[in-house]
Length: 339
Image (cartoon, rainbow, N blue to C red; front, side, top):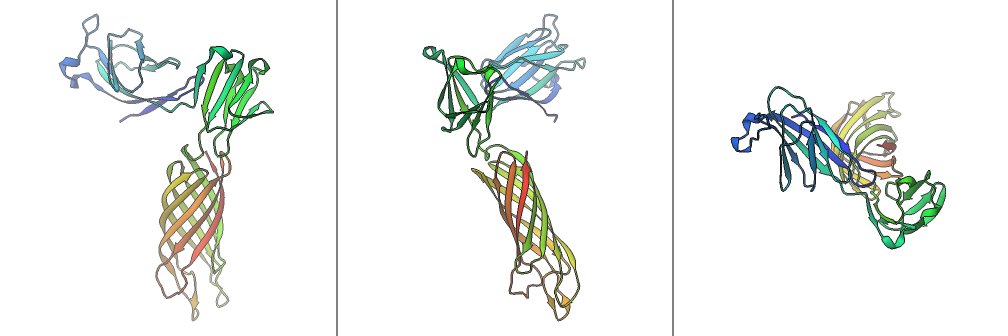
């Protein structure tokens, strides 16, 4: 199946994603759904899966028929049409090219819409004011470099420089920016600020720490996805310095992976992994004792800002041999970047 996604965005408001799912020969369709054009030729058909009302369709050769059934639009147009044009109310026209293969086809699309970030309404009794409100409330407003106050806030239309940018900031949320030349007198803007924990982002995290009780250094790299729910994979190296009974040194490794959950600024994760070392924790009677086996992996990542993150992590290991009374574990701290 071939998938191609296109994002359509108005100046203010929602994001719409149009995904081309697949095409197939219309001969697979029953005769009852076939439509012929003015020349008597069987039309091609587009199926648009969407709950949005009021969508209009055009092609360079016209549209023969449109049927809207609940969550789906069916559009018939001449098979040799070079493009299908889609108009969603409040958005600019989008034109999807079509490749004519000498026969009629069925094209299937998916049209999704996100929750609006900005809702605009108008009040006739406040033509000289612009109302800015946010969810959540009490976000900080800046007009250029000048601090205005907290939302909800009333802007004097005559005091706004059209070249400025209105910046809206709330702790734990991504900031929102609006170009002042898009603000309309008398309008009320309701702006939804997105939490750090709501947006899916990829990240990498460089970590360093020690094995508790032994003092051996641990270095690692973790990559994954942040969001309401996410995942990660991690790799570490542990450099064994040996002890006073021998000069042996050992470079060991561990890998792990698991799932995560974000709450406000913090991303909690839990997983499992495997570690391996030929010469690891103890020297018993002049001989090194190796360690390998499964381990538990726990940690958290804190969103310091929209992109900068810090982390703390521990691995708890127990493997063979198990003669030791002490279960080794490490503590690592890290810094990274989310994007």
